Image (cartoon, rainbow, N blue to C red; front, side, top):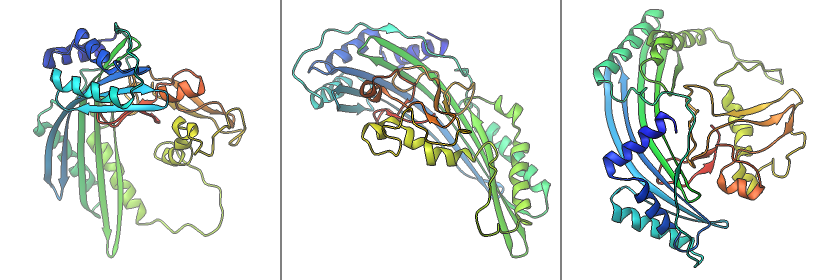
Length: 361
């Protein structure tokens, strides 16, 4: 297991007394009514959010959430329960509730868990959550000053600094225990350019699974100046002519079009339920032969990358469309069983309150 996995496991043991024996006991309860598979998803999340408007801090917040979600699978049926209380009794009740929802009546054998080594695409100690608010506000003020200095027309600058640090641990009835520590930071700048009656707004920002080192390569000044530059450029922009024209999309935010137009349709749950345009199309030509689409959860320090997914599997470099031909779907455990394929590391959930679904990285 990587350092991140060990850190996460030690965190839940030291803070809540959850060790292998406790996890195995909860799994035994979850499997006590005949489920085919059970998993425990422990999560502790810390986060902060600072909003800066009109050259002043508008709001600042900090939050902490924790809990465990218990999923029991029996065929296509899912029993799911969660609790924010990580005490033994509360967790046992959640496990029993999930077991009853997916009950078959048979009692499963005891579960022994072993460590699963996750990947290492970012540093577990890299987090801005522990940085004092004054340090974050200093970065924000630097961005504000840089944007206003770029052009006299910049009349308003809004900046948002968002970060979080998650400890997660997944324990499964097939004997796997995996953990991760997931830092995340996002820095957004919005600029308003005013010239007479013309008002133009542009936004820019960035982030990733990094700490303050992110701002070494992406300074607040550079992010703010790009937002301001775009707002100023929009002042001289002209309306596009009517009609059909070739469009060249730059790398970056234009990926949102791919995400919405194609990505969701390749998520396996929609294809399992036969509600996607790509249902039963694996092996068929579904796009231009110039088109190859990859879902990659392995890019170091990237916002979408993960060391393990929310089912305890390693992420992958998954080719979905190759030279226009559909090669496969974005999978989670339920869908891999249905389609008889290997996991792709795409089991994602909003939090411990939700069971995982196959989703894009």
